[in-house]
Length: 396
Image 1 (cartoon, one colour):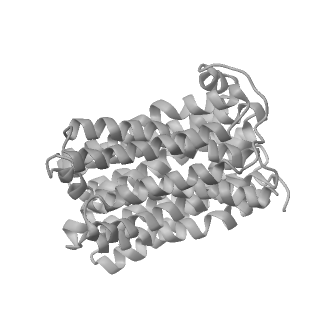
Image 2 (tube, helix red, strand yellow; image 1 turned 30 degrees about the vertical axis):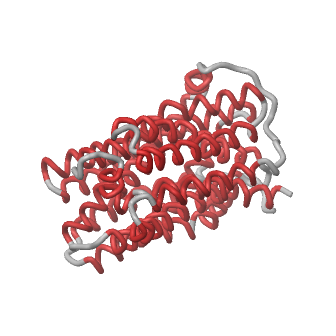
């Protein structure tokens, strides 16, 4: 039973990431259709406003779900709300009512709903039996697959017009709402308020360790989403479709290896995958910035994806290991707050550094951040997990 549920829940995670990444390869074209300027500032604003909503509402959905002792109604509401927001964006263009500021408000609304479907689906995966690494590996492969396919498919959808990704996103979120209505709700009964995220960190400050790694990992994802896109297009003169394929060189191995490497962390412990993966991950990011040809850059992106897949499921599983069963919604909400802040930082910070100091400086900062987190967090990580080879869960 839990295997079937795992597949459906992972499907929700996939759809949210897939729809998020659909717009990236030709975001400047979409912004222009919505009444904005074809500048990096307008594109950055359109991408960033969704992430601001992620940050503000991730914990809200988690805490409301924990308090109600239910997940499914909130996931369905999140998917439906996101679909309606995408349809409203279509209406802005079709009817001519509203301007780019209206589009930004609707993008914020969309983000505030879809983060609920995303975060609570991961939380429901946390609620399942079968091993935390296995369950977080399922979440990770869905995240990676959504991002891997979102960029190249989005690039192709733009050939049908700038609104192509919006139409597909609305349809997929409506389908998610229908499918999720058939999933059993296994949330543990819980009570609490919005302060539970901070209360959880105060009660279990060790959660800041996986939160920090989550911030760094999502920083690099946001970095590649905007800065990487511009770098590949400008440095190697790629169009949106080709740029999406290069981005997929990272996200494809990142997706395919999430599940087996999540299971691996159940068997060998969390510490080695997190530490070794993060150090290599940071170094590989710098290597991409040094690549003289698009072929070498693509090969570097593959390596980044492999090493990222070593870190991500182990990090999310560590949150599950630390959080009590009735606190998992709030704990994962906190993780997604840090992750969304990282994604936002990768877009805003990476774009600012690239604009002021050049692309390589931005790549160097992104790589150094990933490696620096290891140096700062390793002593705490070893104290939190005194047995680095401790195993978790059971095979299913």
